[in-house]
Image 1 (cartoon, rainbow over the protein chains, first blue to last red):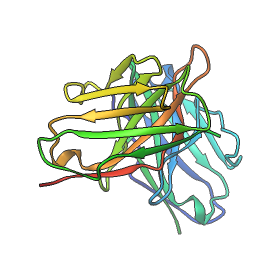
Image 2 (image 1 turned 90 degrees about the vertical axis):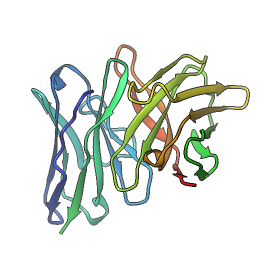
Image 3 (image 1 turned 180 degrees about the vertical axis):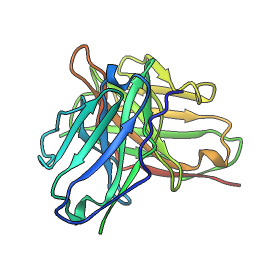
Length: 106
Length: 121
């Protein structure tokens, strides 16, 4: 079983930047995807292939990776960004999600 | 624009079989992989498995002994069966489409709204 570790929670003031990490063995050799899940809603694809943003996703959302840690950055955080965020990878043709991070806007 | 909609019983008895269907609208199922993900109350996302439009499957090893997926492209739908359910299978079940660039890994680009299934007598 592949373990992807995320911080349980991140708190950020409006207008500031939030950074969510995702760590796992050999993460540097695979692509990381990120999903946003607003309260009571289905997940939404936020970032794919580490850094790519689907059409319709604001530029405030960006992804990066260094070594075995991927990072989702939300610039200029807004109240509507309060949600759970999950990273996701594939290993041996099986999907694995991170433990999830709850972003709270102060 | 493609849309997915899950359907099925909201209540399943312990030891019974959970059966859900995902209906795809707005696009053909051809050439795509389709997946199921679940989320127990208050917990994170768990990958269940995927099915290709021609019927080949790959399941999460942790659920493999109880999971069966099928597809009916003539009806534009695919299905999930989970047998011998217990209270631990209580969750919101989501279906999603898998997309990718050639040679790269898959990502879940379109999701259904999810359906809640409770396992209880």
